[in-house]
Image (cartoon, rainbow over all chains, first blue to last red; front, side):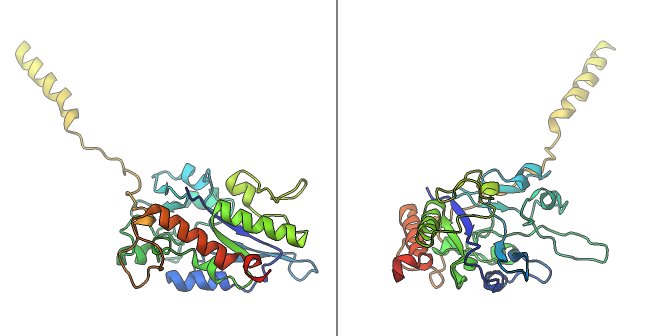
Length: 205
Length: 74
């Protein structure tokens, strides 16, 4: 069974923000909401690293654990989704998430949160697959179209990998072996609790 | 008097049975992605909507072809 996961290769990410643009365009994400963003560590310093960050669809998702109305659910493919009809916009998930993934549209002067929005792994939501209602609330359902997330498919350097955990881990492991460096997979340990085979001792996750 | 007390007690106790659940019930049920969208124009070719095995194989092939540049360039 497929278990969907993201891997961001910091050795390849060039901070082009193509993934961010692809996501915003594909799902028509409103102003003020960024389901994905690129973070650069030590910006301007030689050796800086950039990573593309969004919901990692954690194996043991903290957002699911803290949601007081139980609006989250995990699909059979391991994608963490939520039901906007149930969400009350309390923001607990935002505080719990180690990746800052849950987003809240700024709807008013005093920060009325509205319904939470986040990366869906391009898997839509609980509405009917491919329906207008699903698109308006959650964006396109590319998985149901037999496609992978737009951010990863659009990535020009293939720094961002998405798909079945076995496949993306294999692609990444092959890269590390060929280039002989850069085994660090940012966020992998935090999200999935395990380290891929390519990740050696003494490296941060 | 005793009968009236019993009737009133029964009515009071049975009133709880008519209480409707007030929970939110959690998220709605979601259809599996391998069921497809029913929109042929946007569906990727070479897999059959409704067939989980072909869907999984399609995604694996797409991931390898689209993301594994070593298998294409080297």
